[in-house]
Every structure is written in structure tokens, then in C-alpha cells.
Amino acid sequence: CGDVHTRLNLYKRLATAAKAEQIDALLEDIVDRFGKLPAQGQTLFDVHRLRVLAKPYGVVKVDAAPKLMVISFRPNPPVDPTAIISLVQKNRHIKLAGNDKLRIEREVPEAAQRAAFMRELLRSLGKPIPATTV
Image (tube, rainbow, N blue to C red; front, side, top):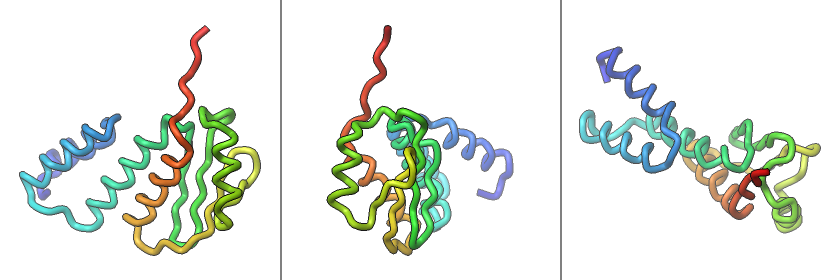
């Protein structure tokens, strides 16, 4: 997109998208207006999809390098602890790093593949535990 104002508006819409459906609608709009996204644009959408999915799990940060990925959770994340333990026990490449991090030592060279891997990993933890109201 050559127009700076339009580009900033699109970035803002993506940044405020809180649901996968909103991200998909924006992607469809962009493809309709400008054609197929370049790889960097697709990566931006993949990363934001991961961010939206990760938030309900209490994830505060995801570092995803080609050979090492780290998921950092907030204290007392809304995730079943037995699901995390089971995940670590079943996968030699996944380790607990302190009380609030999962360390994944696995080579995933492409950014899109890393984002998809991280989304699947989070889904494997089950649904986030809903907050209880008092």
C-alpha cells in the first residue's frame, strides 16, 4: 500500500482486532484491495493471530526463533497445570523454564510454520480456564 494514511489505518485495524474473525475479515479486505500479500505481510497476520489466540491462555510473550521458542505466561495463568506437565512429559523438545515459561528446542525455520506450531501447542493445552467471579 503506497498511501501512508491508508497503511497506518490498516495497521491500526490489525492491532485492534481482538478475534480471529476480525483478522480474517481484514485480510480479505486487503487482498481484495491490493492483491496477494507478500511473505512479510502474511507473517504479520500470522503473528497477530497467535497473539489473539495466546492472550486467553495468560501468555505475555512469545519468542520464536528458528531453533528455540519460548512462551512466557503471566503468574497463575488460566491453564490446567496437568496439561502443561503432560505436554512436557510427552515431548522431549519442550521443557519448563522456571515457573512461568515453556522452552521449545525444535528447529522450525519458516516464520509461518513457527506461528502455526505455537498455535497448535497452545491448543494442545486445552481451553483456558475461565475466570471465576466472586
